[in-house]
Image (cartoon, rainbow, N blue to C red; front, side, top):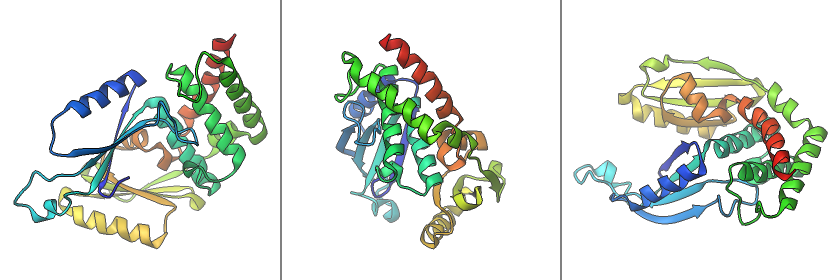
Length: 261
């Protein structure tokens, strides 16, 4: 996240990610592309993959002093595949569940090693190996499979993730909301959703800031509202939705083993 906020696009394949990156880089817009990070070719140390484009914001509303006040601030566009998104959000779920900053590469070394191994496996399943793991070297994949299997058995990763669930408390009807705050409280295993109309944007921001400063919730996010299904798809980490990742672990290990046979 860079100053103003962030946008995230989730697409089916790595080819779609690269096509979308090319489209945005070639598209004429008032905002200045100032940084680009290819975490697919060179993943972060923890295994995170995706492509980030960072822009300097330029308002098109010359007569709006509020909009002009954002000029020069940065906004980040994240491009991910569905696999990359599921991996990243599950790391957040595990971090929240364990009260560790796993998404910042901090916390239990074995949990971090498990997710890093799964990132290697998923990258090769997606046929998008990084500089650190190539399909020409079966050793990298074999090591990742052995590590993921060993740590899953030792830590019971699948069992822990599959058993963790939260209750949803809707403070407002989302059908009438334009913005919403999704807030999770891990100790109570509860997610609260607060809705706001389009005219209540300032109240939504104030409420979000108050919650962030109060530490009442473990984590919270302010987004444009959607129905529960849309919110869970975009922010599975706030709903502790790990079903797809658990299924991916099982299937990825199976597919990866077939690749190296």
